Length: 344
Image 1 (cartoon, rainbow, N blue to C red):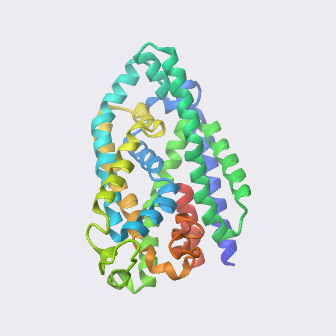
Image 2 (cartoon, one colour; image 1 turned 120 degrees about the vertical axis):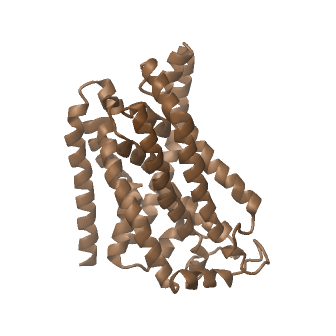
């Protein structure tokens, strides 16, 4: 029965994705319509599209587990930094300027913008190659995170997961282009907002609520990290400098990602950019802050996480931490988590 409910949730989710793809087909009458949605995408769709592109399965499954394990509850600062630097400042600095310049140069993609801005075809080709090459490991990391959760929830083989997701994504993107992606991102963003709140509440409840979880975290000591008692529930964690570098790395790096910056190309008007800035920042605080906050309690489940003979290295890597934390939740909540990560 529980498995049937999870399958139904997935079928409905995929059905909506594909349905939106065909609904948005009317916007794909030309190349600009396909790539930019006719430059008529509103602030809510753009902000959610930016947020769901930013906070992917890599963050929820990989980074949240890794940095939560390393820094404890202080890893929440990474999410706050992402909201302020990666979302708020990115919209303020890049939003209006990017929209004006790309519209003036009639550019639909980042390589096309570079080629037109500097009148250099070689630069256009080079940037295209760079985007193509480096999006491959990025996409691979997304599928790696998905496979962990699918394996936990459905016992689905990794290769099957890749094939199914590739086919479904291809259908709705090819059918509806960017507008289909933006609408789906909005729907998925709502799922992410609600899902992360529910999941955090459920995980904390396992360890006696928020205060009980903090108390449990305070009792954990890892001599390989720090001998200071209570370091994992402290304000800045065991390595404040390293934490600062991670905040900068995960926040500023997104300013150059083509899948992020291109959201500014398609927004409807300059006034919509101001609205989008507020919406995107709020989204980032809840989702990014929530993900890293959740990951900060990963060590409370250390008795369920397998280590190698050295007693330090995680047998299945940091990607196994979040799935382990969620494995004891109610099957319906696990189904919600799978939908949440698919949305991301």
